[in-house]
Image (cartoon, rainbow, N blue to C red):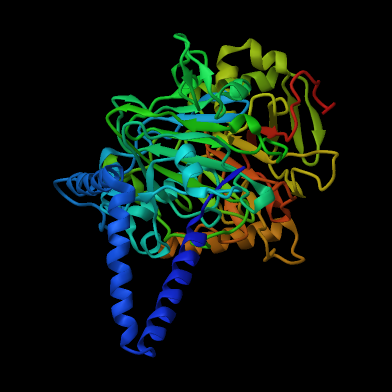
Length: 571
């Protein structure tokens, strides 16, 4: 069993070591001078023994360490330094749409997740500070075992670095938007370096039994690698890739992951500068996913730099970074005046609320042609009245039988990072003028229905918030500021509050009641269950009375358990 040593634990060890050193110094002052000569004699003997015992091998490692430190210093980027620009002055990426690599376990890849300049900023941030990587082992000989398991170098960024550096805010906030996980539910960012021959054997990132519960991990490669260095996911073949000596094709005994790293039938993700790999260490039910076991293959030529973020189920660093109005709150008119490299990219979610509840928004999620197709489909299929709206369920056969509809469905699943088998059929709904939907939560607090995510897309509307909140989706949040007011009264109160904020030019991400006006093509997705699977009552929401033109929506309910093949209404 192995467990990564987190930044907080490491800081504690350093503190204890410093305290012990101070006590020893105080003790030395109180003894007689005759002990000083004895101490010097022991030191000389120790140096002689060190040279005799370690010899050239130890000197070689020290030389390698010095070379690495020099290389780190030389790798500092040239040109304009963006590490201390203001948050809103930092450029962003063009696209954040994930590519599904595996659904079991859940693994996603996005090229160009970080810009070249951002990769260089992270490497410069840790220049000259890398240390031998550590893992905690249940064994007597921790150092030797550690070298067999993991022999690269790494460093955790400090709390102060993450708190005080705008360029780090910008990068880290993107990691969290991309993973759909709150900013304070994570460990410190770790930067790692692998030279030739360095690797990390097969391991798992989450170990709840030892208080290391990590729902997901994101790795971003900060450099290209000439050869080797892939991230390996053996999945169902992981038993063939453990630290056991096996014969290669020439009959030679090879240990560890080396054989698996040369197999074309296994999932290997090649390092590419700016490429992000997001994978989930627990499945949709919250159980530890052993298929997420992975390894860092040995670097054969060149080097590999990575940044990695380990997400947690609960607040860990308790660090929420300053808001960036370009990516948080409702999109304002100022976005159109920004240079293209400063504007949010395609499929870049806006964070409306990080947690309790978690709510995100993406404009232009559907094209006008896709909206037309869905509304035409809604006119053809049977409907029924329920809770203030007219509902129409599609079927799984309809979804898979239409390439256009299937493309939309797959996009929805990628957006909430849920496997395709874990959803109900698409539902199309419409409201006539004045119709509304009462407050409700989309999931239940028992085994009858588990919906961790809902994704809603408006098919009509222009994004204008009326004075009565006409047609808006309203979230009460954790405190329910409307008290005993009716839904219509709360909608009017919320609309007035949001319009006042907009008039003052303020940007807010969590002003409840939260009002989301309908806009054709706009997607809103939110959690009804927390990342740990508990019902989140703060996700209570409703639909404000529709305006004179009514309202159309499409919505997808995602499930904890696989449902594909079941008929509508029999989930």
